[in-house]
Image (tube, rainbow, N blue to C red; front, top):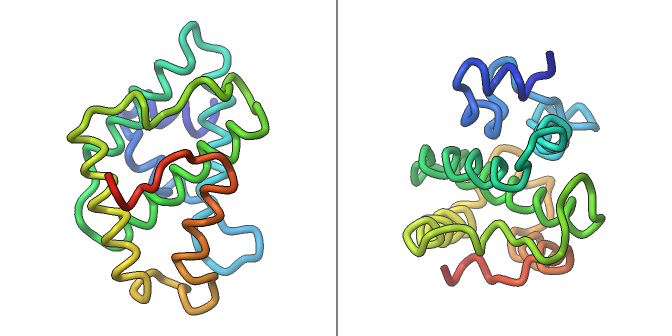
Amino acid sequence: MGKFEQAVNNNEITAYFKGEGDYFSPEEFSMGYHNEILNFIGMMSYLENKEHPYQLLVKYFRLYLSSLKEDVLDAWSLFNNIGCFYILRQDNSFFLNQNEDLMDELTAEEKKKIGVLCRYVRDNFDKVPGSAQMFPIEKQMKIGIKYGCPYNLLTF
């Protein structure tokens, strides 16, 4: 059984998205941070064999989003998980295609929450663990656009 299937069975979807406990995937260069893309790929691999994989992705993302608070770690996790979606969609990885956009599936209230959290991480980026070794947040947000995110997440 894969980690995402374990998360589904144990009702731990949020912990999976955040990389908490058993769901922590170390960053490639052993900097001690969680690597969201590894977990996102694991989730996509699991969902790909389901009857309605895209609808399940939306369901699980909404569940995760509903759990987030105005906290630097939650906001950073959200920013990275949204980036994972667009990176994988750009490659036509798994079952994703350019006509499906996760943001389009969300309610106005959910989008507003994304905007609040993205502005929060922008304004508090210096509190993100390891931020001193990263590209500035503004540059990272522009990279997301490069990967096909059609929205300015700060304006939600």
